Length: 225
Image 1 (tube, rainbow, N blue to C red):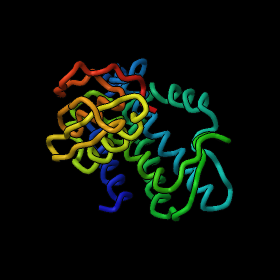
Image 2: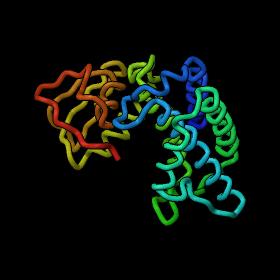
Image 3: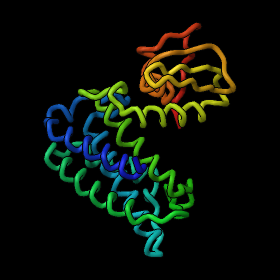
């Protein structure tokens, strides 16, 4: 499947799932420390809005960053986290539609900034970034969607991505049993086995290795970048 279409399909599933989320559920804690489910939903929507405006700016020659600053990003999420389920669904749908249009118009070679003067994100990375935002944060809601529910292409992609990012701190040989793939971290080390989703979930710093088996005690991981 085309990567952009995979992102849009994941977004459609996410938006459909939001239709069943009630106001009281949004006030409850998510799996992210310090954030309610409302924070997570607001963040996913505002990320779509920010990516859309940055891509439009790149397309029209009027550059804008995804976020005005990290502080502005955090404040905006906090300001919308207490909105009703209906309002957050509307915000999510509007932002997703805007982003879908910009992703389809995006040209190869385009770059955007996360914050003014900050990290540069190229076109392929924009697609991967959004895919991660939708799938990981849907699982962060802690409702009826877990890493084992991720589509196999996403779980395999995220496993490779996170393994590469952990190369400097870990030495592991990861066996993703459901997709029959072995991934080395830091050139390889003691064996850890599980589904691709559970392995990737642990590598992004969530949980303590639920669903995994290891030939040694699992190391404690810090936050993923």
